[in-house]
Image 1 (tube, rainbow, N blue to C red):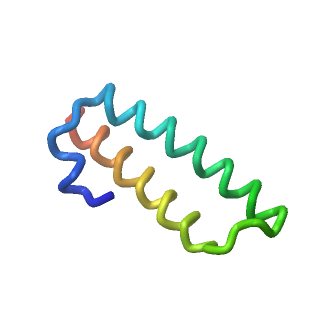
Image 2 (tube, one colour; image 1 turned 180 degrees about the vertical axis):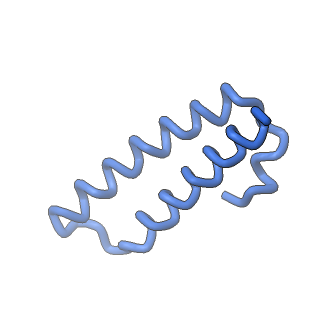
Image 3 (cartoon, one colour; image 1 turned 120 degrees about the vertical axis):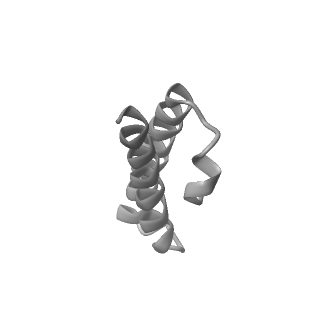
Length: 62
């Protein structure tokens, strides 16, 4: 997800997306620990998506 995709979203929507992404990150970490995750890079992508969403939330507050 790119930062420009987040421009039209409200704070509630972003926080909902953050919670979904954190759940997805948790599942990916579990799969990695059981060696069932073929693409480890997806963990990094989800982490960066969460950071982008949280940055957008804090930027909209100021």
